[in-house]
Length: 77
Image (cartoon, rainbow, N blue to C red):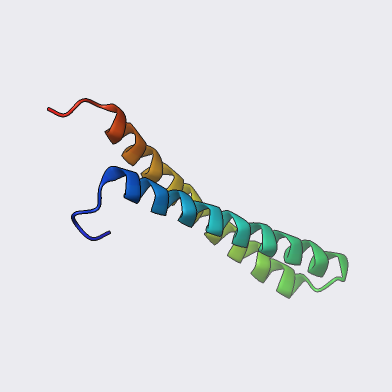
């Protein structure tokens, strides 16, 4: 993130990014289930892998958001 953004703005951006990645992960989980049900294991595996990647990115953004929120709670030194 560019320097100069305050903790509030950075927290907002990380929370929004986390939410987007969680939504994308949910989409890929649904697609994987649909393909497994149809017996198309190659496509199901692809979507399961994509879901996992989005989940990892979402967790990273959520962790960064928490750091910025904690930064807002600490008194300046």
